[in-house]
Length: 532
Image 1 (cartoon, rainbow, N blue to C red):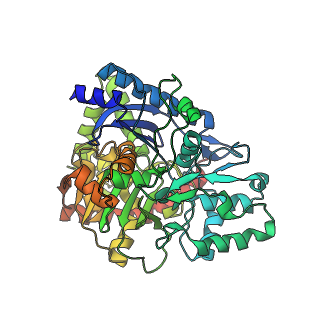
Image 2 (cartoon, helix red, strand yellow):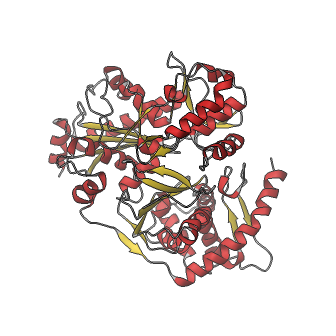
Image 3 (spheres, rainbow, N blue to C red):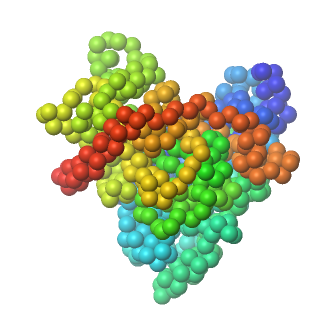
């Protein structure tokens, strides 16, 4: 009820979650029962500067402040009141990347995001050194690549963090990170739920000849588990977040987390033998393991849940950007005809049309590579649609091929887990933009993974709510439950969402598509070389 929500806000009992996604910053305000009661957002885009994907610090702060102002406006409109105090706050953002600072808290080079693929040499050498798969986008890869490139700023680093860690530090003064996000900086030891001491020592020994004035643990944020206190909103932080001056300091913060961790929380997938797939600008699957894999795999990253359980992550740089671009072409066509465009209806019509296409897409192929795709060995990408004269070029097959492309690389990584490592899962939940049209993305993903896929009502917008839940867990875990237990008992109450099982014909068709897709990668490589 509106009156209850208004009272919650006015009494300072509302909890705030903010997530920095690739194209959108979103804020969600939840009540004591973890129900969303207000939201705000800000659209933004990364920039390619000197060959590297980045967001400026000015864009980061303007985006945060505009998102919060948008939340305030929503609260005023819905409840005719103002946010003065908050019960708890959580910050989440895109994982990984590189944000190095000096002792004056000045950023030394522009933020290098997860999307950059310039770290191949560093990632390869570290993977060999650690006997552990170190992805290109991890912070340790960025750091070591800067060292290999003899970048002069490295000697001046006093703190290295992720985007979530940076925002949290500026709002609280605390140089900490949730263990899930920390696991995307440097591998975590599941026994200690802290950075691997063996790998820290190996790295320090590796760079010792350089004579830097720091050692690795000197510059990394402290790793914290879900439920641990991570500081409070300072006066300066309150002014940075709410430029109107209404918000008062003092609210406690949960550990800042990456978008992978908040996706697991928002889909109730932190328990072993559960998993989730996030499908938006990028895509990734997270399968919570019962034990370590038998060996390292280049396609599979080992990270953790926000409470430190081992997770096999398959991360793909590209997902829906090319799909969205094609839908936009149809929007322009409608506008040419003078037809008013409802984007939700347009997506719904096109996505559902795909379901009537041939299970193997009639031979059509799509490569959605806006950027490089490490899993398939592409340092750069060129969006590409491929067909031969004899293929069945229909709208249904065209849309189906583009939907398959959105999760094709994801399938390649997960085939290793399920077929080679024999990993077993009880439930996989999908969330993100791909699932906004009911039933379609879900059915496509079920075919790709040959596994039942569940989608909850929160499928379209999970991350900001996920970090709000982690903030709620910090202050509302009265029974001292595990994170998985608390989510199940206090938030989801056994709700597993709507499940779709894989259709055998779809599975067979997707398998045929992916074999053609693998062979066709040579065409994508040629496009990268031929078109600048």
